[in-house]
Image (cartoon, rainbow, N blue to C red; front, side):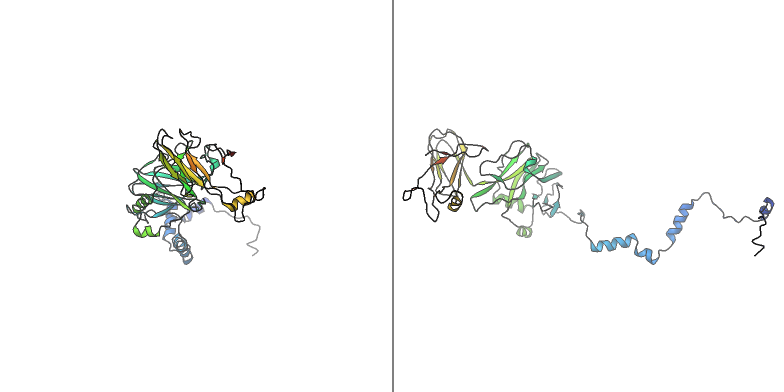
Length: 365
């Protein structure tokens, strides 16, 4: 131990002594890469039990057992021409000659049905909701009209189809039986609005559905009273779902005619011969006012008849027309005026404002 810990200087090997020793270094081949060899050696080593359990292959199998992917596998779902399957979309989707039946996600409730052979070319259809205040030119609403849903923006604007396609839009309008109705307004350029006049009868709707689904699928389709169906052969920029008082529209010409209300049959408009010089569309609206509502607003001294509107407003006729309006019905407790024992006074009020201007009532008795 004293010898090992002695303070004698260490003795190094000389060059001659090193030459006498053999070469104990490993042979090196400069034509091979050491990193590739080391990787090959690692790959040839069999994995241990722990490595085998946490390998990516096993992790993928275990993960797929408990979760389902949220994307749609295109190859998994086959689509046959003439028989559509429902798909979900967020803002847009692709459609071609095979057609498509798409449901809007995020609980929008919007459904777009493009029957087969209606799209002339592949296109990306855009469909989303917009608030009314986001539009620089919102739809004009007249007295008694209101939006029943948000504005529906569509694209591509001006896209034409080889036949009618259907758009289902849920609405929150209260129709009160047959007192009110749903109408569709469209805007092709985002500035002017007009009524969408494509026929949306039950026969036309069933024709679109029969070309898109099997009979078994048709029986499972839920028809909701809170949903309105729009048939169109082209895409405008916007669609607006509007609720209004039910309007009876008839074409009246120089020969005259009569229009009666389906809500209040006693309300009629009679056009004598010569009142019009050309044939125009005449609309008649009758909005009944309940006696209970009038009593709550005005007291039990006032009763109101149905409010009658004739379209187009502010139009002059060459001969006077005759409007028939039923007299007001008193509330259950009876009419009471300031002159006890006297008969109720009947007054006639009218408003000649038109367009979106609010009604201004004048006593024309």
